[in-house]
Image (cartoon, rainbow, N blue to C red):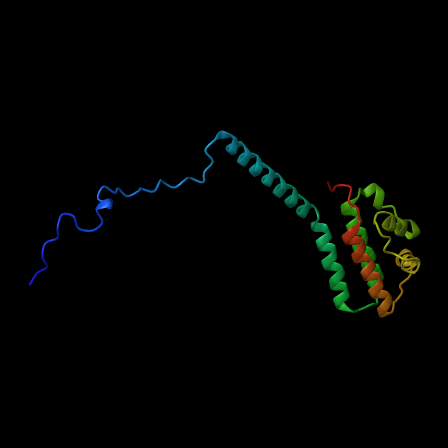
Length: 168
C-alpha cells in the first residue's frame, strides 16, 4: 500500500513563490586599500628595527653575562684565600671591555675604586670594601666569609648596573 499522491496546493500556499536567500560571500581579512599595506609595511619595519636594537643590546652586553658567571663561580667555590684578587681581575677585565684602555689600564688603588663607584648609579663599594680592593694587589690577604660575600655582591651590582658609554 502506497501513500496517496499529494495535491498541488499542499502546505502553505503563501510560500509557493518563496525563494531562499543566498548568503553573501565571506569578507576577506586582507587589506583592500593601499593605505593599509603602507601601515602594515611601516609596522613590520618598526618591529624589525626594535628586534635589531634588542639583539644588538643583548650582543653588546655579553661581557656582563660572562663577568656575572665568573663572579658566581667564585661564590660557589667558597675558597676565600684569593677571592679579592680574583674579583679585582674580573672587575678590571669587565671595565676594559666597557671603557677604553686609556681610561682603565693605568688605574690602581683608590683611583680604581673611585672609578668603579663613579661609573655606577649606586656606589656599590663601601669604604672598607674599597680599601680591600685597593690594597689587594699589594697584600695577600684572606678575608672572612661575610666580607667575601659582601665583596662579591658589590661586584655583581657593579657589573650589572655600570653605565656603558657604548650603550644606546
